[in-house]
Picture 1 (cartoon, rainbow, N blue to C red):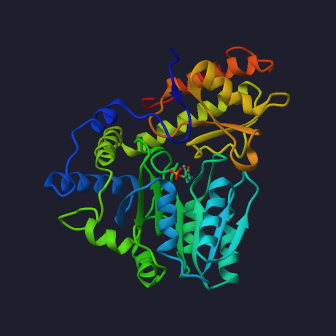
Picture 2 (cartoon, helix red, strand yellow):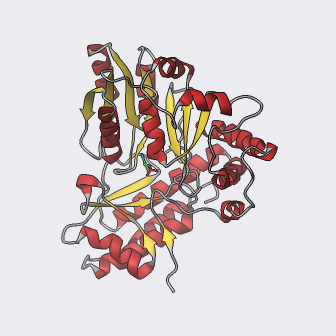
Picture 3 (cartoon, rainbow, N blue to C red):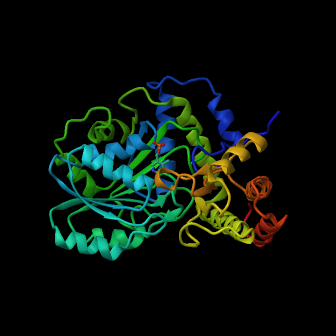
Length: 386
Ligand SMILES: *Cc1c(COP(=O)(O)O)cnc(C)c1O
């Protein structure tokens, strides 16, 4: 027997209350009960997104919603700006180029943030730019962008701001409306604590004008089709929804409401802080800035002399713990702890304890208990439940 733990930034562990909601008998999606569920899910998502904008729900992984934010916005030849600092930023580049956009790419070193001043300059240099694409939490590096600053800049221009908040929403404070995010993209399987298969977008009035003028052919992800069906009193989905996942998402939002959004963010701050303190106490360097708001992922450099690919493999095969490796060009160079969603103090201690055992096995000089001790000391200071 091997007890399994997911310590990855997606998919993430699912709370028992959500797992049992998944087991409820399937409701027909044209039944009045489904309208109630959908209405509750949308209201709950609006609370988590901190938005009064329309929220649309798709049966898709997060990337489906990212694609939706391109096909509903970009006509071939349109100018867009992509600020990329990791694997998921590259996905915006690929998506926008695939759909024929003329892309201005601001490419930053992986592990650093996008500089809002560069975005301001690029927008001033090309007033034809109609959309700015960026990540909130760049899951491949753990970096969190300053969306508040970027939003204030983009809001002063005709361009819309499209933010991939797939791993950050529900872990780190993101004020969709107050920070002028025009299309905010999220997914169920990260901080929103549901198995994979649902993706969400919140669409502002400014974005709706762009969407309505966009003539790119699209069908499954056509925003106006969803808006027509999903908003109003008799909310439905245009096509068969992932009914059971929505029931699960409703239960997960219930847990978020019970804890309170501010406490959810505070819990993630403490988990991030403790995880970072733990790895550093073991003599491992963080990858990227030590940012107190970067709470979804702790990215760590593989120490010299250790085979990076083996860290995740030994953790998984011997101890049943899934850590994440490096993605794209960071493969073998970093490893990552995910702690967005259903995570608590005990998960951080498990992760760091297993890391100590794994590193020792791989020849690293481990000071036993240094990582778990440092993390425990931080966690013990939290004023909120962890
Ligand atoms: C997970 C993730 C995605 C991709 O989502 P899928 O559900 O795998 O399609 C995109 N962007 C970010 C920031 C992510 O963390």
